[in-house]
Image 1: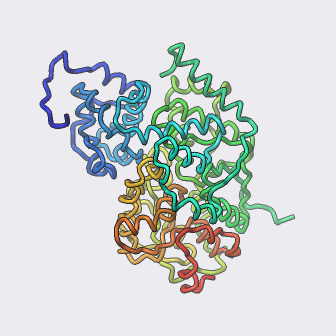
Image 2: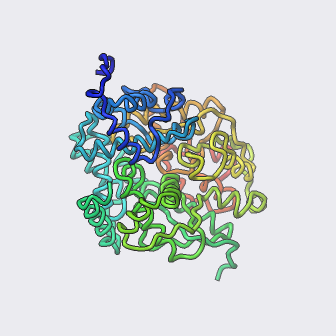
Image 3: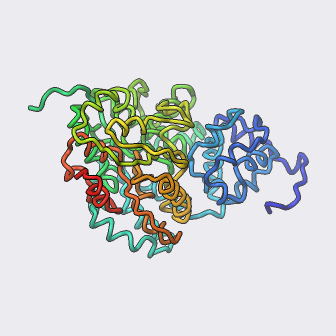
Length: 194
Length: 295
Protein backbone atom coordinates (compact mmCIF):
# COMPACT_ATOMS: atom_id res chain seq x y z
CA UNK A 1 0.00 0.00 0.00
CA UNK A 2 2.75 2.41 0.91
CA UNK A 3 4.22 2.50 -2.58
CA UNK A 4 1.03 2.06 -4.53
CA UNK A 5 0.13 4.79 -6.99
CA UNK A 6 -2.06 7.58 -5.73
CA UNK A 7 -4.78 9.09 -7.89
CA UNK A 8 -5.80 12.47 -6.63
CA UNK A 9 -9.25 13.78 -7.37
CA UNK A 10 -12.16 15.22 -5.44
CA UNK A 11 -13.42 11.64 -5.07
CA UNK A 12 -10.22 10.22 -3.59
CA UNK A 13 -9.28 13.14 -1.35
CA UNK A 14 -11.04 13.52 1.97
CA UNK A 15 -10.34 17.08 3.04
CA UNK A 16 -13.04 17.03 5.68
CA UNK A 17 -10.84 14.65 7.60
CA UNK A 18 -7.98 17.18 7.58
CA UNK A 19 -10.26 19.80 9.08
CA UNK A 20 -11.32 17.33 11.76
CA UNK A 21 -7.69 16.63 12.65
CA UNK A 22 -6.93 20.34 12.72
CA UNK A 23 -9.88 21.05 15.00
CA UNK A 24 -8.99 18.21 17.40
CA UNK A 25 -5.28 18.93 17.54
CA UNK A 26 -5.48 22.71 17.49
CA UNK A 27 -2.67 22.63 14.93
CA UNK A 28 -2.52 23.40 11.25
CA UNK A 29 -1.81 20.46 8.96
CA UNK A 30 -1.70 22.63 5.87
CA UNK A 31 1.18 24.82 7.05
CA UNK A 32 3.72 22.00 6.58
CA UNK A 33 6.11 22.55 3.65
CA UNK A 34 7.86 19.18 3.93
CA UNK A 35 11.27 20.20 5.24
CA UNK A 36 11.48 16.83 6.98
CA UNK A 37 12.94 18.04 10.30
CA UNK A 38 10.30 16.08 12.21
CA UNK A 39 11.36 12.81 10.64
CA UNK A 40 15.06 13.64 10.97
CA UNK A 41 14.70 13.97 14.73
CA UNK A 42 12.09 11.26 15.31
CA UNK A 43 13.47 8.42 17.49
CA UNK A 44 10.73 6.08 16.27
CA UNK A 45 10.99 6.64 12.51
CA UNK A 46 12.69 3.28 11.91
CA UNK A 47 9.65 1.51 13.39
CA UNK A 48 7.15 3.39 11.23
CA UNK A 49 6.04 2.60 7.69
CA UNK A 50 5.24 6.31 7.21
CA UNK A 51 7.74 8.71 8.80
CA UNK A 52 6.14 11.78 10.44
CA UNK A 53 6.57 14.19 7.51
CA UNK A 54 4.91 11.71 5.16
CA UNK A 55 1.98 11.36 7.53
CA UNK A 56 1.42 15.10 7.29
CA UNK A 57 1.75 14.97 3.50
CA UNK A 58 -0.75 12.12 3.25
CA UNK A 59 -3.16 14.11 5.40
CA UNK A 60 -2.72 17.17 3.19
CA UNK A 61 -3.63 15.00 0.21
CA UNK A 62 -6.69 13.67 2.00
CA UNK A 63 -5.35 10.10 2.16
CA UNK A 64 -6.34 9.42 5.72
CA UNK A 65 -7.10 5.71 5.26
CA UNK A 66 -3.44 5.08 4.52
CA UNK A 67 -2.46 6.87 7.71
CA UNK A 68 -4.95 5.13 9.97
CA UNK A 69 -4.45 1.67 8.50
CA UNK A 70 -0.76 1.54 9.34
CA UNK A 71 1.16 1.16 12.58
CA UNK A 72 2.92 4.51 12.44
CA UNK A 73 0.59 6.53 14.62
CA UNK A 74 0.79 3.89 17.36
CA UNK A 75 4.57 3.85 17.23
CA UNK A 76 4.87 7.53 18.11
CA UNK A 77 6.45 7.86 21.56
CA UNK A 78 5.06 11.37 22.23
CA UNK A 79 8.60 12.63 22.82
CA UNK A 80 7.60 16.00 21.29
CA UNK A 81 10.82 16.38 19.30
CA UNK A 82 8.86 17.02 16.08
CA UNK A 83 6.66 19.74 17.58
CA UNK A 84 9.69 21.33 19.20
CA UNK A 85 11.67 21.58 15.97
CA UNK A 86 9.00 22.36 13.36
CA UNK A 87 9.85 25.69 11.70
CA UNK A 88 6.17 26.23 10.81
CA UNK A 89 4.78 25.45 14.24
CA UNK A 90 2.92 22.37 13.10
CA UNK A 91 2.25 20.54 16.37
CA UNK A 92 2.81 17.05 15.05
CA UNK A 93 2.67 15.44 18.49
CA UNK A 94 -0.84 16.87 18.92
CA UNK A 95 -1.78 15.74 15.40
CA UNK A 96 -0.66 12.21 16.34
CA UNK A 97 -2.88 12.35 19.44
CA UNK A 98 -5.80 13.45 17.25
CA UNK A 99 -5.18 10.67 14.72
CA UNK A 100 -4.99 8.05 17.47
CA UNK A 101 -8.23 9.32 18.96
CA UNK A 102 -9.99 9.16 15.59
CA UNK A 103 -8.66 5.67 15.01
CA UNK A 104 -9.57 4.66 18.56
CA UNK A 105 -13.11 6.02 18.29
CA UNK A 106 -13.56 4.16 15.01
CA UNK A 107 -12.61 1.08 17.02
CA UNK A 108 -9.07 0.66 15.82
CA UNK A 109 -8.83 0.22 12.05
CA UNK A 110 -5.07 -0.02 12.66
CA UNK A 111 -3.12 -3.26 12.71
CA UNK A 112 -1.24 -2.25 15.85
CA UNK A 113 -3.18 -3.96 18.58
CA UNK A 114 -0.62 -4.26 21.37
CA UNK A 115 -0.10 -0.55 21.96
CA UNK A 116 -3.87 -0.07 21.87
CA UNK A 117 -4.32 -2.88 24.37
CA UNK A 118 -1.74 -1.31 26.72
CA UNK A 119 -3.52 2.04 26.48
CA UNK A 120 -6.91 0.49 27.11
CA UNK A 121 -5.72 -1.39 30.21
CA UNK A 122 -3.94 1.69 31.55
CA UNK A 123 -7.12 3.75 31.30
CA UNK A 124 -9.26 0.94 32.75
CA UNK A 125 -6.90 0.86 35.74
CA UNK A 126 -7.38 4.56 36.36
CA UNK A 127 -11.14 4.17 36.17
CA UNK A 128 -11.14 1.26 38.62
CA UNK A 129 -8.44 2.24 41.11
CA UNK A 130 -7.77 5.93 40.55
CA UNK A 131 -4.07 5.16 40.32
CA UNK A 132 -1.81 2.96 38.29
CA UNK A 133 -0.72 -0.37 39.72
CA UNK A 134 2.14 -1.53 37.56
CA UNK A 135 2.01 -5.17 38.52
CA UNK A 136 -1.69 -5.42 37.80
CA UNK A 137 -1.14 -3.59 34.51
CA UNK A 138 1.66 -5.94 33.42
CA UNK A 139 -0.25 -9.05 34.48
CA UNK A 140 -3.40 -7.96 32.68
CA UNK A 141 -1.39 -7.12 29.58
CA UNK A 142 0.24 -10.55 29.47
CA UNK A 143 -3.07 -12.26 29.99
CA UNK A 144 -4.97 -10.30 27.36
CA UNK A 145 -2.17 -10.26 24.78
CA UNK A 146 -1.49 -13.99 25.16
CA UNK A 147 2.17 -13.21 25.92
CA UNK A 148 2.00 -15.03 29.21
CA UNK A 149 5.73 -15.33 29.69
CA UNK A 150 6.65 -11.77 28.78
CA UNK A 151 9.09 -10.43 31.37
CA UNK A 152 8.75 -13.70 33.26
CA UNK A 153 12.34 -13.43 34.45
CA UNK A 154 11.91 -9.83 35.55
CA UNK A 155 8.97 -10.39 37.92
CA UNK A 156 10.70 -12.21 40.78
CA UNK A 157 13.65 -9.81 40.64
CA UNK A 158 11.38 -6.81 40.92
CA UNK A 159 9.45 -8.43 43.75
CA UNK A 160 12.58 -9.05 45.81
CA UNK A 161 13.65 -5.48 45.18
CA UNK A 162 10.31 -4.33 46.55
CA UNK A 163 9.38 -2.71 43.26
CA UNK A 164 6.12 -4.58 42.79
CA UNK A 165 3.33 -4.05 45.20
CA UNK A 166 1.23 -7.16 45.71
CA UNK A 167 -1.56 -5.33 47.48
CA UNK A 168 -2.91 -1.88 47.20
CA UNK A 169 -5.67 0.30 48.46
CA UNK A 170 -8.33 1.98 46.44
CA UNK A 171 -8.32 5.74 46.53
CA UNK A 172 -10.73 6.93 49.15
CA UNK A 173 -12.40 9.28 46.70
CA UNK A 174 -12.55 6.83 43.80
CA UNK A 175 -16.18 7.77 43.15
CA UNK A 176 -14.97 11.17 41.94
CA UNK A 177 -12.96 9.53 39.18
CA UNK A 178 -15.92 7.41 38.17
CA UNK A 179 -17.97 10.58 37.93
CA UNK A 180 -15.37 12.26 35.71
CA UNK A 181 -15.53 9.30 33.32
CA UNK A 182 -19.32 9.29 33.24
CA UNK A 183 -19.62 13.07 32.79
CA UNK A 184 -17.25 12.90 29.80
CA UNK A 185 -19.30 10.06 28.34
CA UNK A 186 -22.47 12.08 28.82
CA UNK A 187 -21.00 15.13 27.07
CA UNK A 188 -20.02 12.92 24.15
CA UNK A 189 -23.46 11.39 23.89
CA UNK A 190 -24.93 14.88 23.65
CA UNK A 191 -22.32 15.85 21.08
CA UNK A 192 -20.87 18.49 23.39
CA UNK A 193 -17.33 17.12 23.43
CA UNK A 194 -15.09 15.30 20.95
CA UNK B 1 10.49 19.53 66.60
CA UNK B 2 12.91 19.89 63.69
CA UNK B 3 14.21 23.31 62.81
CA UNK B 4 12.03 25.48 60.64
CA UNK B 5 11.90 24.73 56.92
CA UNK B 6 13.53 27.14 54.50
CA UNK B 7 10.96 26.39 51.79
CA UNK B 8 7.65 24.53 51.68
CA UNK B 9 5.93 22.70 48.85
CA UNK B 10 2.91 20.59 48.14
CA UNK B 11 4.00 17.28 46.61
CA UNK B 12 2.59 15.12 43.81
CA UNK B 13 4.60 11.87 43.74
CA UNK B 14 2.72 10.07 40.96
CA UNK B 15 1.95 6.36 40.69
CA UNK B 16 5.45 5.05 39.95
CA UNK B 17 6.94 6.62 43.05
CA UNK B 18 4.71 4.40 45.17
CA UNK B 19 5.85 1.21 43.39
CA UNK B 20 8.64 0.65 40.88
CA UNK B 21 10.29 3.98 41.69
CA UNK B 22 9.92 3.92 45.46
CA UNK B 23 13.61 4.71 45.84
CA UNK B 24 12.99 7.99 44.01
CA UNK B 25 10.30 8.87 46.55
CA UNK B 26 12.42 7.78 49.49
CA UNK B 27 15.54 9.63 48.34
CA UNK B 28 13.57 12.75 47.43
CA UNK B 29 12.15 12.93 50.92
CA UNK B 30 15.60 12.28 52.41
CA UNK B 31 17.30 15.03 50.41
CA UNK B 32 14.55 17.57 50.98
CA UNK B 33 14.58 16.88 54.72
CA UNK B 34 18.34 17.33 54.81
CA UNK B 35 18.04 20.63 52.93
CA UNK B 36 15.16 21.72 55.16
CA UNK B 37 12.66 21.88 52.32
CA UNK B 38 9.18 20.83 53.38
CA UNK B 39 7.11 18.45 51.22
CA UNK B 40 3.46 17.81 51.98
CA UNK B 41 1.80 15.16 49.83
CA UNK B 42 -1.47 16.11 48.16
CA UNK B 43 -4.10 13.87 49.79
CA UNK B 44 -5.96 11.44 47.54
CA UNK B 45 -4.24 12.45 44.31
CA UNK B 46 -5.12 10.52 41.16
CA UNK B 47 -3.08 9.17 38.27
CA UNK B 48 -2.31 11.98 35.81
CA UNK B 49 -3.24 9.73 32.88
CA UNK B 50 0.34 9.81 31.62
CA UNK B 51 0.95 9.04 27.94
CA UNK B 52 -1.85 6.47 27.37
CA UNK B 53 -4.60 8.93 28.30
CA UNK B 54 -3.51 11.82 26.11
CA UNK B 55 -2.66 9.38 23.31
CA UNK B 56 -6.29 8.51 22.72
CA UNK B 57 -8.39 10.82 24.87
CA UNK B 58 -7.20 14.37 25.39
CA UNK B 59 -10.29 15.44 27.32
CA UNK B 60 -9.78 12.64 29.85
CA UNK B 61 -6.11 13.55 30.21
CA UNK B 62 -6.87 17.24 30.78
CA UNK B 63 -9.67 16.41 33.22
CA UNK B 64 -7.54 14.07 35.34
CA UNK B 65 -4.79 16.68 35.57
CA UNK B 66 -7.24 19.52 36.28
CA UNK B 67 -8.72 17.43 39.09
CA UNK B 68 -5.24 16.88 40.55
CA UNK B 69 -4.45 20.58 40.28
CA UNK B 70 -7.61 21.42 42.19
CA UNK B 71 -6.75 18.84 44.87
CA UNK B 72 -3.29 20.39 45.11
CA UNK B 73 -4.90 23.72 45.93
CA UNK B 74 -5.82 22.30 49.33
CA UNK B 75 -2.15 22.11 50.29
CA UNK B 76 0.06 25.16 50.71
CA UNK B 77 3.09 25.84 48.56
CA UNK B 78 3.99 25.45 44.90
CA UNK B 79 3.44 21.93 43.56
CA UNK B 80 6.61 19.83 43.54
CA UNK B 81 6.59 16.99 41.01
CA UNK B 82 9.23 14.27 40.79
CA UNK B 83 8.18 12.31 37.69
CA UNK B 84 8.97 13.92 34.35
CA UNK B 85 5.78 12.53 32.78
CA UNK B 86 3.45 13.78 35.54
CA UNK B 87 5.27 17.12 35.43
CA UNK B 88 4.76 17.36 31.68
CA UNK B 89 1.07 16.40 31.84
CA UNK B 90 0.24 18.84 34.65
CA UNK B 91 2.07 21.71 32.94
CA UNK B 92 0.53 20.86 29.56
CA UNK B 93 -2.91 21.00 31.14
CA UNK B 94 -2.27 24.42 32.65
CA UNK B 95 -0.99 25.60 29.31
CA UNK B 96 -3.82 24.22 27.18
CA UNK B 97 -6.66 25.24 29.47
CA UNK B 98 -5.30 28.77 29.81
CA UNK B 99 -5.35 29.31 26.08
CA UNK B 100 -8.42 27.34 24.96
CA UNK B 101 -11.83 28.36 26.32
CA UNK B 102 -13.72 25.49 24.67
CA UNK B 103 -11.52 22.83 26.27
CA UNK B 104 -11.64 24.71 29.54
CA UNK B 105 -15.45 24.61 29.60
CA UNK B 106 -15.51 20.90 28.76
CA UNK B 107 -13.05 20.13 31.55
CA UNK B 108 -15.06 22.27 33.97
CA UNK B 109 -18.09 20.10 33.25
CA UNK B 110 -16.05 16.90 33.49
CA UNK B 111 -14.64 17.67 36.94
CA UNK B 112 -17.77 19.54 38.00
CA UNK B 113 -15.81 22.31 39.62
CA UNK B 114 -13.83 25.42 39.06
CA UNK B 115 -10.52 25.09 37.30
CA UNK B 116 -7.53 26.57 39.02
CA UNK B 117 -4.39 27.09 37.03
CA UNK B 118 -2.55 29.51 39.26
CA UNK B 119 -0.41 27.23 41.39
CA UNK B 120 3.11 26.97 39.93
CA UNK B 121 3.99 23.36 39.05
CA UNK B 122 7.70 22.71 39.53
CA UNK B 123 9.94 19.78 38.85
CA UNK B 124 12.34 18.89 41.66
CA UNK B 125 15.24 20.06 39.49
CA UNK B 126 13.76 23.52 39.27
CA UNK B 127 13.23 23.67 43.03
CA UNK B 128 16.81 22.64 43.72
CA UNK B 129 18.50 24.77 41.06
CA UNK B 130 16.35 27.88 41.15
CA UNK B 131 14.31 28.16 44.37
CA UNK B 132 16.86 26.64 46.73
CA UNK B 133 19.76 27.76 44.58
CA UNK B 134 22.98 26.17 43.42
CA UNK B 135 25.15 28.08 45.90
CA UNK B 136 23.08 26.98 48.86
CA UNK B 137 23.10 23.44 47.47
CA UNK B 138 26.90 23.49 47.19
CA UNK B 139 27.11 24.77 50.77
CA UNK B 140 24.95 21.86 51.97
CA UNK B 141 27.34 19.25 50.56
CA UNK B 142 28.97 17.23 53.32
CA UNK B 143 30.60 14.54 51.22
CA UNK B 144 31.67 15.84 47.78
CA UNK B 145 31.16 13.32 44.95
CA UNK B 146 34.64 14.09 43.68
CA UNK B 147 35.84 11.89 40.85
CA UNK B 148 32.39 10.54 39.95
CA UNK B 149 31.71 10.95 36.23
CA UNK B 150 28.00 11.36 35.66
CA UNK B 151 26.04 11.20 32.40
CA UNK B 152 23.02 13.43 33.06
CA UNK B 153 20.03 12.06 31.16
CA UNK B 154 17.09 14.42 30.51
CA UNK B 155 14.99 12.26 28.23
CA UNK B 156 12.03 13.87 26.50
CA UNK B 157 9.59 15.56 28.78
CA UNK B 158 11.73 17.69 31.07
CA UNK B 159 12.43 20.15 28.27
CA UNK B 160 9.98 19.54 25.41
CA UNK B 161 7.99 21.25 24.01
CA UNK B 162 9.75 24.47 25.06
CA UNK B 163 6.65 26.51 25.90
CA UNK B 164 5.35 23.90 28.36
CA UNK B 165 7.98 22.89 30.94
CA UNK B 166 9.89 26.18 30.73
CA UNK B 167 12.60 24.47 32.71
CA UNK B 168 15.65 25.19 30.61
CA UNK B 169 16.86 25.66 27.05
CA UNK B 170 15.13 23.00 24.95
CA UNK B 171 18.03 21.78 22.82
CA UNK B 172 20.96 22.56 25.10
CA UNK B 173 19.82 22.43 28.73
CA UNK B 174 22.34 22.56 31.57
CA UNK B 175 20.18 22.39 34.69
CA UNK B 176 20.99 18.75 35.50
CA UNK B 177 24.69 19.30 34.95
CA UNK B 178 24.60 22.38 37.18
CA UNK B 179 22.84 20.54 39.99
CA UNK B 180 25.17 17.56 40.01
CA UNK B 181 28.27 19.73 39.56
CA UNK B 182 27.28 21.50 42.78
CA UNK B 183 28.07 18.25 44.61
CA UNK B 184 31.59 18.09 43.18
CA UNK B 185 30.76 15.32 40.69
CA UNK B 186 31.89 15.68 37.10
CA UNK B 187 29.16 15.78 34.43
CA UNK B 188 30.43 14.28 31.16
CA UNK B 189 29.68 15.68 27.70
CA UNK B 190 27.70 13.08 25.76
CA UNK B 191 25.47 12.74 22.74
CA UNK B 192 22.27 11.06 23.90
CA UNK B 193 21.11 13.05 26.91
CA UNK B 194 17.96 14.29 25.13
CA UNK B 195 17.10 11.16 23.13
CA UNK B 196 14.01 9.06 23.86
CA UNK B 197 14.50 5.82 25.87
CA UNK B 198 11.41 4.13 24.42
CA UNK B 199 9.21 5.30 27.27
CA UNK B 200 6.00 3.39 27.82
CA UNK B 201 6.64 0.95 24.97
CA UNK B 202 8.26 -1.05 27.76
CA UNK B 203 4.85 -2.68 28.23
CA UNK B 204 3.53 -3.06 24.71
CA UNK B 205 6.64 -3.23 22.51
CA UNK B 206 9.73 -3.85 24.65
CA UNK B 207 11.81 -4.37 21.49
CA UNK B 208 11.64 -0.62 20.97
CA UNK B 209 13.16 -0.05 24.41
CA UNK B 210 15.93 -2.61 23.86
CA UNK B 211 16.86 -0.68 20.76
CA UNK B 212 16.63 2.95 21.89
CA UNK B 213 17.91 2.49 25.44
CA UNK B 214 20.87 0.55 24.10
CA UNK B 215 21.95 3.65 22.16
CA UNK B 216 21.73 5.73 25.31
CA UNK B 217 23.76 3.30 27.42
CA UNK B 218 26.36 2.95 24.66
CA UNK B 219 26.67 6.71 24.34
CA UNK B 220 27.17 7.15 28.09
CA UNK B 221 29.81 4.43 28.10
CA UNK B 222 31.63 6.00 25.14
CA UNK B 223 31.74 9.33 26.97
CA UNK B 224 33.52 7.65 29.89
CA UNK B 225 30.66 7.98 32.37
CA UNK B 226 30.68 5.92 35.58
CA UNK B 227 26.93 6.14 35.90
CA UNK B 228 23.77 7.73 34.50
CA UNK B 229 21.59 10.14 36.45
CA UNK B 230 17.87 10.41 35.67
CA UNK B 231 14.87 12.35 36.91
CA UNK B 232 12.06 10.18 35.53
CA UNK B 233 10.79 6.76 36.69
CA UNK B 234 10.12 5.55 33.16
CA UNK B 235 13.62 6.40 31.96
CA UNK B 236 14.95 4.65 35.04
CA UNK B 237 12.89 1.55 34.42
CA UNK B 238 14.11 1.27 30.87
CA UNK B 239 17.79 1.95 31.55
CA UNK B 240 18.14 0.10 34.86
CA UNK B 241 15.51 -2.64 35.04
CA UNK B 242 15.95 -3.63 31.39
CA UNK B 243 19.73 -3.14 31.26
CA UNK B 244 20.63 -6.84 31.51
CA UNK B 245 18.13 -7.64 28.77
CA UNK B 246 19.55 -4.84 26.62
CA UNK B 247 23.05 -6.22 27.12
CA UNK B 248 21.94 -9.71 26.12
CA UNK B 249 20.03 -8.50 23.07
CA UNK B 250 23.02 -6.51 21.86
CA UNK B 251 25.81 -8.84 22.95
CA UNK B 252 27.52 -6.27 25.10
CA UNK B 253 28.15 -5.35 28.72
CA UNK B 254 27.61 -1.93 30.28
CA UNK B 255 27.37 -2.43 34.06
CA UNK B 256 26.17 1.13 34.22
CA UNK B 257 24.42 2.07 37.47
CA UNK B 258 21.45 4.36 36.85
CA UNK B 259 20.77 6.69 39.78
CA UNK B 260 17.85 8.95 40.45
CA UNK B 261 19.32 12.42 40.90
CA UNK B 262 18.08 12.49 44.48
CA UNK B 263 20.07 9.34 45.30
CA UNK B 264 23.32 11.03 44.25
CA UNK B 265 22.35 14.29 45.93
CA UNK B 266 21.44 12.34 49.05
CA UNK B 267 24.91 10.79 49.25
CA UNK B 268 26.42 14.26 48.91
CA UNK B 269 24.30 16.06 51.50
CA UNK B 270 24.72 13.33 54.08
CA UNK B 271 21.50 11.30 53.90
CA UNK B 272 22.43 7.83 55.26
CA UNK B 273 23.05 5.43 52.35
CA UNK B 274 20.47 3.05 53.84
CA UNK B 275 17.78 5.66 53.27
CA UNK B 276 18.39 6.15 49.57
CA UNK B 277 16.96 2.92 48.21
CA UNK B 278 20.30 1.91 46.65
CA UNK B 279 19.41 -1.75 47.27
CA UNK B 280 16.39 -1.40 44.99
CA UNK B 281 18.51 -0.72 41.94
CA UNK B 282 18.84 -3.64 39.55
CA UNK B 283 22.36 -2.74 38.40
CA UNK B 284 24.28 -2.84 41.67
CA UNK B 285 25.85 0.58 42.35
CA UNK B 286 27.80 -0.46 45.45
CA UNK B 287 31.06 -1.54 43.74
CA UNK B 288 31.24 1.85 41.98
CA UNK B 289 30.44 3.81 45.14
CA UNK B 290 33.05 1.86 47.13
CA UNK B 291 35.64 2.36 44.45
CA UNK B 292 35.04 6.10 44.56
CA UNK B 293 35.03 5.97 48.38
CA UNK B 294 31.56 7.41 48.56
CA UNK B 295 30.19 4.87 51.03
